[in-house]
View 1 (cartoon, rainbow, N blue to C red):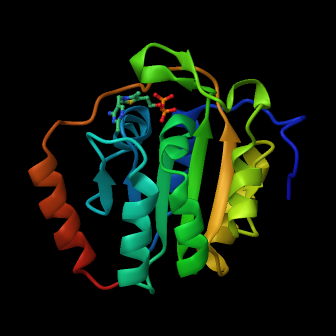
View 2: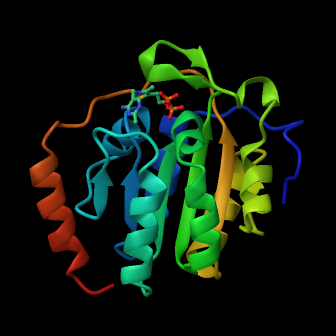
Length: 199
Ligand SMILES: Cc1ncc(C[n+]2csc(CCOP(=O)(O)OP(=O)(O)O)c2C)c(N)n1
């Protein structure tokens, strides 16, 4: 488990999203946050169990929490940018209080609001440690992934052990590699149909 933000490898969101999706075998739900988080989820190959938040910052983790509480047998992942999570920090306390065992939040920390022009977030230069905030909010197992191997191990842990889990990842500033179709009604309906399928 990695505590400090020192010595963290800077990784790549698109590559790690592909690794994550490649580890999913049981119709796990994945909720992509606004912009790059869901674009790279789309780029990893559309699955009906993916939901793409197309408009608002900070809603990937709350939506994922709702799905996790409603479907305790299904593992659920939220993919969220650091700026978006900072806009909705209270969700960490709510997740800790509700304690869905099947939820894992992955935070892509590039230290910028990249999609609106790269303005710095308070997480820039490690002034704000999102994993430390998550732990102080009551998500005891929150941890930074130091490198690819640790990311894989932490995803594996989230797939097999009780959470809630939160994995922080320092990422580079590569923009999302593709763009999700802007069709929220289709996504909502296909996601709801997929959630009606047993795990
Ligand atoms: C509530 C709200 N405020 C502002 C915006 C405009 N906006 C869209 S994405 C974004 C930046 C997102 O930053 P982050 O979550 O860190 O992801 P990144 O772009 O760095 O991948 C902003 C400011 C919005 N869509 N919703």
